[in-house]
Image (tube, rainbow, N blue to C red):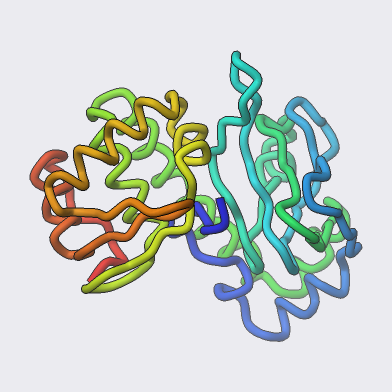
Length: 232
């Protein structure tokens, strides 16, 4: 999976002034990881905020069959580990580097120092957390309530970030199956059904959304919820 799956949550760096973002980087320790390297594991109690500088981080947990069930894929400017920082909670997911990745690791002491100098850091992080929790609650509700074909369509829209016209989502069936916690066969069947309705076109390691607006309207009609933001 090469597209980010961040549920449209804002990047922490975008919410900060240039001075505050620079202060965070200066206070953090940059750590480089090779692709596939485990950054943190589920249950790890070490607190701290991790900010992706370059590369990407796949967040998820191993499934019962040994597959990796992806919750999100975060890119540059995005962060994780805030629950360990504020809630003193152990990590709930594994985090794995996607390709060569550099993480700015900010310790609790480092966070306190920067937030005292730049109080906007607290507000920015709270905004990001609220948006992320809202999106994850909706995702959880989708898994419990919606048919797989609608879950898949919503996931494709989240990954697309496109507008009207054709939009290519680079993700194979295995990655989509892991994200939604189902089999590749089930994903293949759902993709075929969406293709039969001329909403998407399947390709090798990719899916083309024929018309983002049309697919969004199709999803909205089956969820009775507000349309997903970001698709014109």
